[in-house]
Amino acid sequence: MTGGRPVPMMKAAVFVEKGRIVLEDKPIPSPGPLDAVIRITTTTICGTDVHILKGEYPVARGLTIGHEPVGIIEKLGSAVEGFSEGQRVIAGAITPSGYSNACLCGQCSQDGPRSRHGFQAMGGWRFGNTIDGAQAEYLLVPDAMTNLAVIPDGLTDEQVLMCPDIMSTGFAGAEQGGVRIGDTVAIFAQGPIGLCATAGARLSGATRIITVDSIARRMEVSRRMGADEVVDFTACDPVERIMELTDGRGVDVAIEALGTARTFESCLRVLRPGGVLSSLGVYSGDLRIPLDAYAAGLGDHKIISGLCPGGKERMRRLMAVIDSGRIDLSEMVTHSFTLDQIEEAYDLFANQRDGVLKVALRP
Image (tube, rainbow, N blue to C red; front, side, top):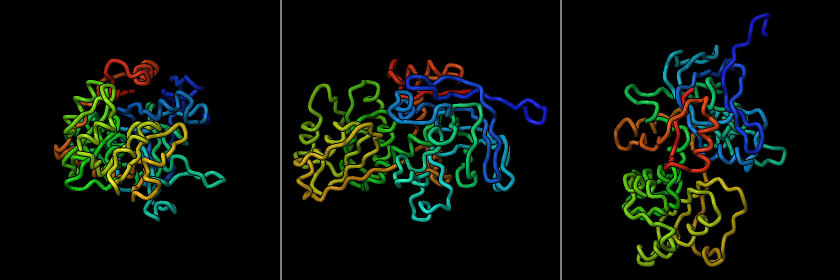
């Protein structure tokens, strides 16, 4: 009760303990002066959420999970300008303030809390990590003027659902890897992020794209996203096959989109001298750099990792790509659930059944 009146409540998917994310009632958030509250119309489940479910990435008990919001502005903070209630918007999974040290250094994706040891595991990722996330009926968006992006007229929720994280992350793999016109690129794993990395490599000018997976549907979608060759790693050694396809030269850029030590090492082994390994995976164990694959440190190789860029300008650019018709990611949404079916949705997605790529969750 507040002043004798009931507190407005909402449904939210909450982390309870390892193996349990359940629907609970929570108070609808109220915005601070610079914040906004949006009513979620569509969101989704990410592979990182599955890491949380499995206890591989720690978050606080009682936290609302999810970081890919599409919705309608319900209420604006008193100091927010340039937006109006009722607008359809998205916000990136990464929510920079715009004025932190990381932002002023040009690393907006790293605008997040630091521990007393200075270690920063996931940069500016707050939704469903350090603050309540998007798998709920309402979401508080901090620093709204930096993070809200208005959805162009004519675009559906499904068309923009990948922008907050998956599309931004996948494209960042190509961008941070420095993919150039004429490059040969290998992408290990064609889950949602790997598929977006494939599309991003094509848009960046790569003229030969080799992808690696084993699931028939993903291999089929990979070709539509721009893959010239799709290697089934259950039918051959993918490293040997890629070196064969490139006549022993190796690739200019190898993108790791799964988050395992094995695929990381495979990326190293297919690089040409001076090539770039662009790492997108979220790793739950230590990585090893083999002496021979890294040419004992003398091969001029580059290893770069990155967190997906956030902020409204990044979201605007991604939606502009979709609005132009150059890419259509809506086919990646293979299943739809209501928020009341959250446990069923997690079970399907976490166990990768029924050809699932991404699910749409609608409160």
